[in-house]
Each structure stands twice: as structure tokens, then as C-alpha cells.
Image (cartoon, rainbow, N blue to C red; front, top):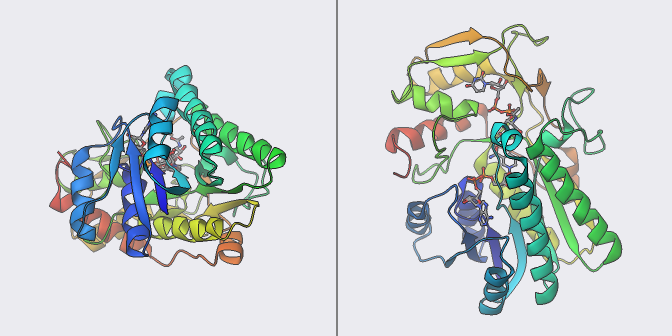
Length: 337
Ligand code: NAD
Ligand code: UD1
């Protein structure tokens, strides 16, 4: 039996593939390379020491998906494929709904045809929007403040409706907080196109000399040092969270489980910058500028449900995240290019 990773050539997909293969799973990746490069696959193969099947195709194409399910003995799906840039989603809503919602619908229909009823879905903490308080439990109100977040919430709703109508399905909705870092070997990592939107890749690109300075968006938030607070989680911990969710789904619980994947600890922008400077020995020139529209002051998870239901807990520290992010960037100043 094989595990299908849609969007498997992306940042989280590659790391999860490495963890799953190491745990003894057979995987097949499926990606249209709209936000990833085939070079990443070669690196994955170097890490695990053998070839990994990867099919190039689009998750919105029933033809591509039906061919995939006919070709491989797929028993469960981890559905990463999607677009994830918040600003772009506001400017191109139809493209985001088509890709993220339309792609998920096509995938679910293809799974139904192939009688595959186990799925782990990449949701996001962004669906909580501006939460009333921290830490955020799974029961918090869902109020996404942008198109990207709404597309994730729509897919969650579709999966809840599917489960209500067809209880034979085992469905895990994983709400990621802020994934950062890289595989410790430095062969795979985050490789954003253009100017990074997210903090950690921006910091590593400053450290490696690709950008002159970091702009810190807002120094007057009601947080201990005035900068935004987030729950950064090492991508290897996140990958292990997927392994735990998959093992749960493979036991056929026929349930729908919704779990935060985070550390439960908040970290400010300045704390992250200081940790990175210490670990890397590189100064990160930075300047406090105006707040970024749409940002919340603070957001961190209550991760206890994942511990109780999946037996999973994040174990890696902020220093580990900085060290591995730096190791990747230093060895690959231009990413996979
Ligand atoms: P990524 O862009 O690196 O990976 C997504 C992959 O999906 C890419 O390889 C892309 O080429 C592929 N893809 C996109 N549309 C496709 C389509 N129509 N058909 C086939 N392949 C397609 O992003 P990531 O950081 O690895 O994120 C993976 C998932 O996790 C996404 O769904 C994202 O929304 C979600 N997520 C990410 C974060 C984060 O901070 N990275 C946080 C919360 C949730
Ligand atoms: C962003 C997305 C969120 C997505 C997440 C993925 C927005 C509004 N939200 O969240 O939907 O799920 O990425 O990880 O875009 N910062 C700087 N300077 C920078 C970049 C960021 O100061 O150059 C600050 C931000 O203001 C924030 C923190 O760093 O306080 C983290 O930002 P980022 O990495 O973009 O993540 P989120 O905003 O949490």
C-alpha cells in the first residue's frame, strides 16, 4: 500500500516524505511544480538513498488523478497541494478558490471512485483569524481574515460534510501554526520564489547576503517587546505530526479529527532574530517599520489535543529551528536553483 502526497514536492511535502519513508511507508508524490522544482526530489532521493515515484499532474484534473489512482495501490492521501500566499490570494481570489477548493473537490471525487477513504488535510491556523485569546484550542471561533484562509476553511467544511454523509471515511484536519526550519542534513528546505513573505526565510536571506536588512512589521503591539508573537514549529516536528496522523488514519478510526500542530509557545520577532544571530553568528540588520496589514498581535496554539489523540508533541527548540534553517540557506544560498 502506498501513501499519496499531493503537493509532495513542496516545502512540507518533501520533509514529510523523508519522515514517512524513514518510518517504512511507501510514498508516491504528485505535483504540478507550480511552486516547487524537480531538483527538490533529487535531494529527497539523496536523503533516503533511493528513488521516489513522482507523477507530474494537477490536482484539479480528474484525468490526472484517476490515472494516478489506477497506476498505484494508494491506501491513504496527505493533501498538501495548494496555493498559500495571503497577499496573492486577496488579489486573485478565483485562482485560489479554483486551486485550493476545486482541487480538493476533484481529489475527493477521485478518492471516492478509487475507494480510498483516508485523508490528512493541510489546514492552517490562519482560519482562526484574530482569536479572542491565546493559546488557541481547536474549539475557537473560525474567522479567517483573507481569501487563503477562507479557502482552507471551505475545504474543512467540505470534509466535515463528507464525513457526516459517509462515515466510513477517516479524516484528519491538521491546522499548522508557523512552520520553519529544514531537514538537519541541509539538503532540503524552504525555497520561496521572489521576496519571502514569511519571517524565517527573510531572515536567512539577510544572513546569506541576498537582502540588506529585515523590516520588522510593527513595534507597538501589546506584546512583551512590542513585536508580533507566533508559534514557530520545526518542519521536522510538523512532518512527524503527519506521520502520527497517518498512522491514526491507517487504523481506520472512521472519525474526523481536527488537531492543531504547534509547540504551544509564543515567540516574538525580536526573540527569533536574536536566537538566529546567536546560532548563526551572523548579525541581522533590522529596523522597525509600520505594521503589516492583516497581521494579528499574537497567535499560539494549544497543542494538547494532538498529544492526547495522536501521541504527538513538538520536541525541537527555537535554536534547532534557527540552526537548521541557517544550515539549509548557507549550503544553498540560491535555494534549489
Ligand atoms: P509549497 O508551496 O512549498 O507546497 C505546495 C505544493 O503544491 C507545491 O509543490 C506546488 O507546486 C503544489 N501544487 C500547488 N497547486 C497544485 C495543483 N493544483 N496540483 C498539483 N500540485 C499543486 O507549500 P508548503 O509550505 O509545503 O505548504 C503545503 C500545504 O500546507 C499547503 O496546502 C499550505 O496551504 C499548507 N500550509 C502551509 C503553511 C506554511 O507556512 N508553509 C502553513 C499552514 C498551512
Ligand atoms: C503568514 C500568513 C498565514 C500563513 C503563515 C504561514 C499573513 C497575514 N498570514 O502568517 O496565513 O498561514 O504566514 O506560515 O500573511 N514579519 C516581519 N518581517 C517580515 C516578515 C514577517 O516582521 O519580513 C513578522 C510578521 O509581522 C509576524 C511574524 O513576523 O509578526 C511572522 O510573520 P510570517 O512568517 O509572515 O507569518 P504569519 O504572519 O504568522
